[in-house]
Image (cartoon, rainbow, N blue to C red; front, side, top):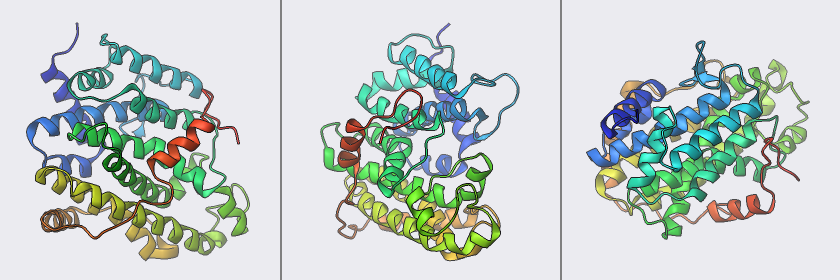
Length: 330
């Protein structure tokens, strides 16, 4: 039996509370309708991510969840099948995927927007690694920037407002750059590295040895560069946020302060950034939300689009799309 809207919203609320306390806190600033729709989108993204990584809300999977024990290519196929069922308005058997179907009936999200996000899971389905800075930014675009675009539409931005959607994408890219620099050690433990191969070669760090103690100081300059990129994308996003309704603007700027703080803290800590996983405490989050309230009442500093924003990265992806096995042809 298909779930009711109330049931899907409740399941999504539980998902965001388990998966992202920071995002759950920021979502409280939205009006009720927007808040519920943000939860619905989060639930789908979280479920896709968990299937792709064989996890449960970002943690080691317990026996039995969808995708458990599957080969990576089969996990990707599962994500795509369940998503297609949801888009078609059919019962997928998963509240998180049905949440996407409900959301697409309520707001003008497009299949192309969904496909941009799925392309990120295709990249992670195999042993794809970024060779260049542009590759890294394309990855950030698919796994986070494309979600930012969908979030903007959920908040009421027109699907025809390319400039604002570009800036929403920029915020997602900034967030993902922060995740990359924070999670170098965790990613390495899973056999992954999202810092460009060209950067590692320039720093004389051999493949697979990025977390060796004697290379830690060599990581600092490249991480600082990634953090500078994150600031550039975040500044662009703040210009776009000023075009939203006040409560939405406040929520977005709160998220920018909280997640942007990750990259800033990693950069501040330098070689000690990976002694412990960088996170934002409750008191710091409260300060950032309060600061965002004041920021939401002021005009943002002017900021240009980064050289590689949504449309440029999308054009690159169109010329060189990820294959279903997760690889990109160079």
